[in-house]
Image (cartoon, rainbow, N blue to C red):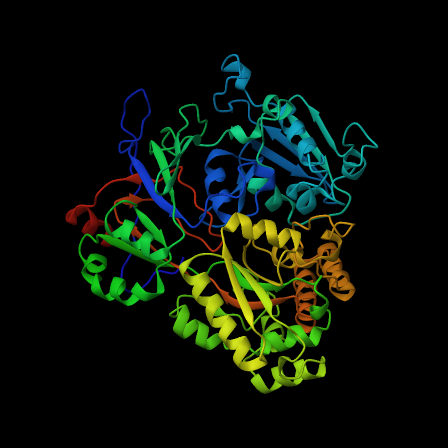
Length: 577
């Protein structure tokens, strides 16, 4: 975590009181924050967006989870596991004290007990075609061509998955190929364990899990509000034996305008803000410097480079984008420095002079960012015009206009407008900008309704694979009318696919990083994307919110968050420790 010199952040842990209830001394209260958009789905194995992941990861859990402080895999529903010497077989021992949240299908508390049957049912549901006769996202990303017997089960050739077995409290998963990231994938929200009773009744939209918070309600007022409440049956305790979670509820307000988010924050309607509106950064940071520097501080400021890439991607089904010189021309036509300076107001970690993988060396040790950057694109109008002319469209003649699809928001709208101006000024091509909701954008991108699309990809785990996977050709379904949910651009590059596959099969991390780097360099030679910037958002939190951790994966965990105002003496004592 990068700590700004403006403040020093110290978090104090408090022990439980001695009551038999084992409640934390400062338990209670509610934490409120904003989300950019309402989740696209509430079905865990179909999650693709950060908003859904943020909410559902408080409600649902998988066999293992990610430690927010160090991004390491830790036990969750499985209390332990073993991996075979060949790396193909994973054996998990389940806890025996985990209960699903209450639901009318459960006849008693004992009926809510999570068992191996629920784990098997969850994996089988993931490996079953949807009502639209399509693969689930989790199947495509985690189990397809990987879990032994999954393909036969998916196609209806087998009634069970041969690589998935259970015996009492033991679950065994056998893979076709070694996957060093498999535990990270199991820690994703897409692998949350669901109750078999709800799976059988097709009631997964009721959002029942085993996490520290229960899904309560969605209130649709002027601003939609999603409310989660404390799970009184939650099984985890802190290091002093106190019940988790500490707080009583979480409230998420859906607001895609940063200015409105900031107004809510400054009026104490929310307790934290993730990212500032570019027009108010200076006023917020310099105008309220005493709030950051006082003893105790009123506000805490964090800045983390994040594993998030903001980019545009081309619809490769459009014949105009079949020629890589056209896509290269678009990349050379973009003045990223101007976007960073005048639109983003320097609120980013790096500009898009690399590729799809964010250039954070500490998270991707051994990755060849130097050569990736040398294969990337700088602002070169002359080269952009030359490439477009060579492709048969001198000064944009005969190319026609294109439509840029994006989800509406202060920054997204401003960047889209600047992009349209730059493309017209350099290439002579008209760009029609078409804003919509995030849900509509995602649907249209998956269906290929548009020419260029705005998106951002946040890492599911700290490995380049999670970014490069979006352009793997084998993720394109067969048939022109079939939706492409992962490789939305429908990008096909055999050289990239070959290097990507070799990287996944490599036995050691050095070879993996080398091959993933080469795959990205190949991607940039024949680019399906226009990298714009990599996130480095500021997070500002009222100091009474304790124990909230931020990391490069953007994972938020509220289990140990509690509310307590600082006193000057307490804060000073902690400074002196």
